[in-house]
Amino acid sequence: MRHLVMIAAIVLVASLVAFSQSGDKQAADALTKCILSNMNGKSIDAMEAANNLCPTELNAWYDLCKDRLSVCPKEYRYACNDPVLDLKCQTEKREIVDAASRTWEVSHPPPPKPAAPQYVAVTARGVSVVPGAIVCPSHAAVSRMFDLYVSHWEDVTQNAMTNGQSRLIRGQGAPAPDLKSYGCALVPPGTPMTLDTRNVVPVVTAKLPNGTTIKGVTFEAMFIDKQKHQNAGTAFIASLNSPANQQAPKGSAQNPRQVEETKPPAHQPEITQMPKLVPVENSNPPAQPPSVAEIDQQAITLWNQKRYSDAITLFNQACRGGMVDSCYHLGLMYDFGQGVAQDFTRAAAFYTKSCNAGNGGACYHLGMLQYPGQPGGMPCSRAVTLNLSRSCDMGIATSCSEVGLSYIHGCGVAKDTEKGQQLLSKGCSLGDDNACDGIK
Image 1: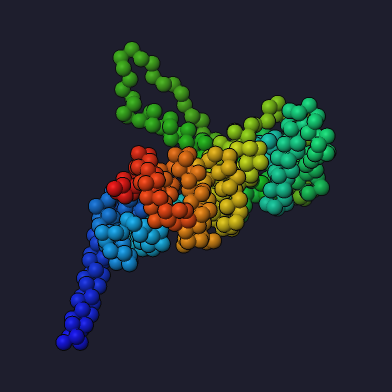
Image 2 (image 1 turned 120 degrees about the vertical axis):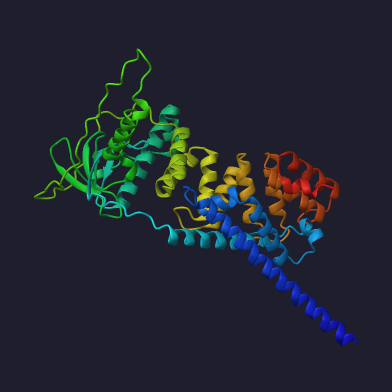
């Protein structure tokens, strides 16, 4: 009899597992169908469709995923709050979204792009504290010259602000960059240049004020593409002259403006002999170098454009100048490997510096770096609770929820159910729905 009961239990468990897997597949198919239908004929990617346009299908699949992977009974699921479980379901969600995206791409191939011109007319410009476009034999040399300009500017600025006291403490400051020793040159702002688009880094040709023609590598941020600006202007004027805008109100004057199109260079200017690059003295340095706040904003703009290699240099400069938000962004870039090799130790260092200066987001990410399941994470770590508590004090709702659960379950701190419920209430008032669900 006992054997029959065991066999019946095994059959029941197997049937439940099969039913769960079948339900998972149906939910995944429904989510995929919703994603593809919302992508059809719209300029929207698969992840945006899943998150914003398919909430019912996504939540249904996500609940089934947690039911399948969790070892906790459903009625006690919130108390378990396993971050590794959420990570696994997020990974499976990404696989479903990627598969839907590939299906869309196969059925909607992009139209052929017109061949890009090999040579484009651009104009030199200065970036940050550099009064022009740096042109060098290699990208590494341009980066080195940029760092030297920044260091020299910082020393000169600090010495001026302290009336010479900074130099008494730190010693002689960094000298002005010696471009000639690195085989580099500084092209004044506004100088016409020709960009060779066939290379992995920007290679430009320019004529210096002394008549010397140079060719070398520069940063993308150190020139303006005149053709792109011209095309944008032409499109704008065309929209003004469209039939919809031709019927002006009675008595109003028509817009007489016209755009004269300029042709890009038809061929690369021939250079019979490549002269050695020479530095160009800047006779008009900027009267007021940009503040660290302005440098931070420039870095954020580059970061939003995913130009990480350009952004990280400015973030480093602003972080050294005391901008805690820049230190926080550096932590994010090293944490998630944006433009640099992923380095959790350096990420933690930047998070710590920003957290100590009052950035709640940095405290939260510092705590999550030490969370169980993360690299270097420790189960029920007091360090996790401490950093998340600081983040909660700065108004981060999710951190209040995590700390509240730590106190309720005695994870990393002495068990204190009353304090845990207070923290969950705070997280709920700050807008965290999970915290609201956990309040008793």
